[in-house]
Length: 75
Image (cartoon, rainbow, N blue to C red; front, side, top):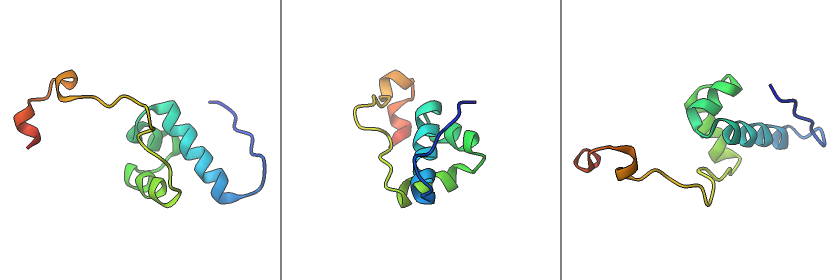
């Protein structure tokens, strides 16, 4: 596991940085939550509370064609 060095003793900034790093490392909310040892729902609450942009701007989102999901199931 990578070591994270904090620049200051600010709990909110530390929490935000941990969440951002976990999301970047895992690439998804479920994996990031597992890395942080919290539930997916708890991480989603923190994303909202800390105004973390997710999914990140410029990141490609899977399309229906690339996921192989029947478009009729999404309606």
